[in-house]
Image 1 (cartoon, helix red, strand yellow):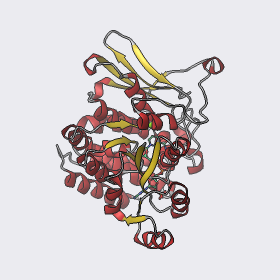
Image 2: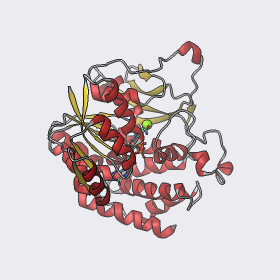
Image 3: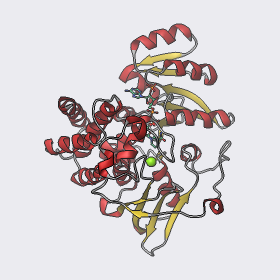
Image 4: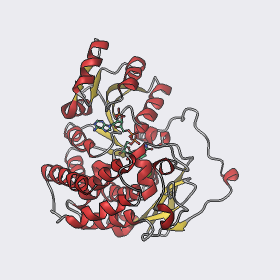
Length: 380
Ligand code: NDP
Ligand code: MG
């Protein structure tokens, strides 16, 4: 029986993780969880899964839930989410919280030697050097949940890092794959939230439409698989059937295929190196699909992907700026304060405005993250 601590239990990845726990009561148990503000859903999760420890974002929600569930331990705020992350009775941490708030809990859990299933890509983007160094030092495994990185991880089983020629991350193209830049001027939040293949949280759906999601994933892959940016390519593949590939020196390419269902990579991270049946999973019927399509990525069309490569190569605090500017700009877009193409303009301005600091410490990263958010806010 694996006991799980789940950060971001009320989110898209969190709910799908709970589906897997529900379907395999003999394999998994929810020991601890954190949520943000959705206490309505938290109540239902507490009743059904009976976690021992629950962390909420706000004190008032902490007070409310504590009175309602006297047999559950509650905690709150920045300290609370760390408490849930390092909960001693949990065997594995699933970090499915959104944004760079996931960084400190990840680092603390690594220092406690927890195995981590990592969905929270912003953590690796903003502080990949600190996370990977801490993981090595503590012999901690970071198991990717992001579908592309899970595909690469699966393709690398039994292979040697030194034989890798390059990684090929596939990209669906998001909600606006077939639109011209002119057409992108006027697109609405509703249109942007309508992803053709994947059902995901709001922020990552917008990131998929701007292609920033793929940019963040390139940086995430750089850290997880310890490869330079020259060896990480992106390929448009509109069906989202091949979730990513690895090319080796002998020109062989190994790929992982499946229907677009995040429960597959989540479950693989939970059961690795074993595999168990996916509850009500759809088998991939290639004969029915018939054709798969591939297309080169146009970096002038998807400027956010270009910015991400640049920020990744520049290193230091640049990826922190990229991520913080993007989080702030996407939130503003979702609130109807800016137009779609202004997201990339704001990211570009924030990057231009920043002088990179090399090998930043955690406190420098947090400082730069905060300054960038303030800077982007001041431009709104
Ligand atoms: P959602 O927006 O659906 O969920 C985010 C979760 O984090 C919710 O539980 C939310 O709580 C919580 N949360 C948000 N802000 C805070 C905060 N400041 N403090 C504490 N908790 C907070 O996101 P997703 O599930 O889509 O994504 C989660 C992570 O997984 C992201 O890093 C994303 O990039 C990554 N990912 C997601 C994929 C997907 O298919 N969705 C695919 C691959 C990666 P509440 O709702 O209660 O406020
Ligand atoms: Mg992905």
